[in-house]
Length: 166
Image (cartoon, rainbow, N blue to C red; front, side, top):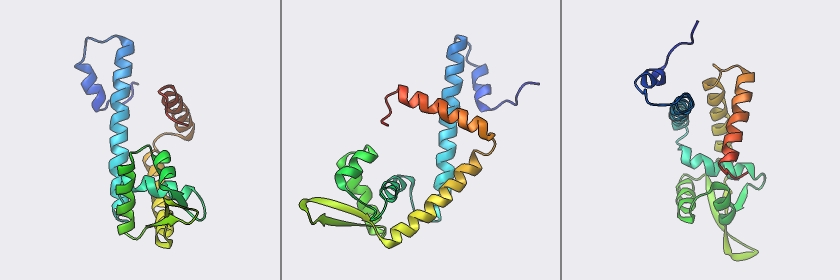
């Protein structure tokens, strides 16, 4: 019995000028994009209850992963987030306005700004990441654990092949 058909299958029936390898690559690319959009939309919906946007989550995560005292220099944030300095500054300002992070001058080097999670930021980050992990687990539960492991390994290989930083 053939697997159920999805939207991509319908699109692919109307594309006839491809080789078998091109068809597989195109269908896979379309599905990856659709899965990424679906995950992003669902995570946005889950995080809305916390007043947190996905783009803010990356900065909260970098600070939370840094461990106590949950503080990084602006340069360290810049390196970990692969953004421009203006992008990091905007995110820090948004989270600072929400009371989740604080900016301080580095007492050892007054030219450097340190960004820290506030107590509220630490608490919110813990809640948000717990909710996010639950949503990710729920959204991917249709795939058995061995399939998720294999897919994870295959996608890692692809990202490394593309030069994704380690």
